[in-house]
Amino acid sequence: MRAAFALSLLLPLTAAACAPDPEPAPPPRLALDCSLPYEALSAKVLAYPGLVPAPQERGEPYRFHNVAGGGEAFVLTQPGAPGHPAVFKQEAVQENGRKVMKNTGCAYGDKAGFDQVMAYLESLGAR
Image 1 (cartoon, helix red, strand yellow):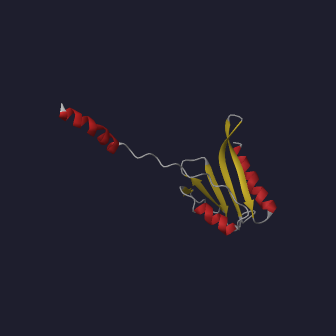
Image 2 (spheres, rainbow, N blue to C red):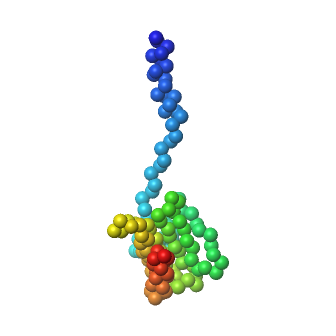
Image 3 (cartoon, rainbow, N blue to C red):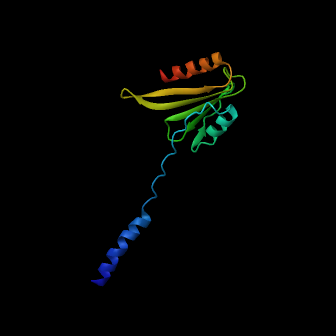
């Protein structure tokens, strides 16, 4: 009887030792702070936890970085890109019961070039 009682006390401890660790909560979404200089904002984006660079397309003057788990991506312009320097954010959001891509950005260079890239990103979400 004592053995059964002692065993009943150990079983919950054994089960707890085998249970997987809970998944850490994802970091809060990174908001673009356009008051920061381009270099500071780019560094903040690149330091964001779980950021995965997308493959670089040859001749493409943009660097896409996806957040692991999806739902969020950042685009950093490279020299030669319209509107460079600029930082863009694409974010999956719920709108009227549908998941849509919301695009925001910080323009540091030519405004017309920035608008051109923003229009391109908007067209990707419309597909």
